[in-house]
Length: 410
Image (cartoon, rainbow, N blue to C red; front, side, top):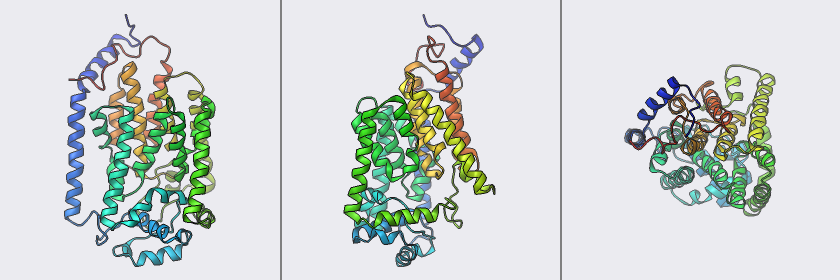
């Protein structure tokens, strides 16, 4: 017989929650939310408010993605890191004249993902980019929880719609993190390849070396290191070795503020971004961000060094990747879907604790407000849910009942 870890009142609350959170209700609710998003996008497009084409009054970040791929195709990627050259090229793009486009400041390796879009007309390229990266993101979620309800639910977080509106790379980043974590246990060499590809956005890979060293996953480390080196050398060969020094110069030039253009309404959602938005000086904001990163790194190492359930380790690393990154914007929070998927997966295996699903629902709602300290608070709350489950490891059962399916079938 399973022993309850909770008292009779908590067990009663658990049973009530289990009747409220059913897989069928999750499926219908997520479907309704996804359809609402689709209708909202259609409405914006009909009013020419969603810039799917270059004649729109608005602009998206996809314009610089598309434009930078043109530099790569022309063999002049190094010039994309020069503000004057990039700005001059942007003025010749219809619809981009109203955008404030900074110089390209991603590693040259990003072009391996975006190069094909430069061969297409803008509207087609936008659709291909969004569809391909979205499918990759959903594939990562399905690899964690192979259920339709999980995939549909992954479509309903606000960072998803924000990423679509901006035409950015949030889906790609979340997918690479998700696939890296999925394959660590049973395909370490493949996991390392996905991690090596994540170097196109290195701030979200800060904690992975610490976790892998703590868990002694040497094959993943070797594979990721080799992939990163090959990835970088291939970019130098394909797009010119001058692109790397130009990228470093652009990065140093940007480092003083580490923020988006002040004329754009795209605030950072990191701890550093919040402090800077509140007027805290760089000298104070950076030490606070580094302290948060150090605490999260220590937590990740502590979990990955011990034989806790892998899903909890993966969830911690995904959450920590967001908290530790000094530069993160709303669309990057698609990574939290990966973290939640691993947290739910552990619930499927060992049962849910009272209140967990309600708290995750509140976090889902909270992501609508991608401003101020809310994103960081949500990360901390999710991390506390993981720590709570870790604290109960080694006890006979987590819940007062046998583990359920995703949320119960009815």
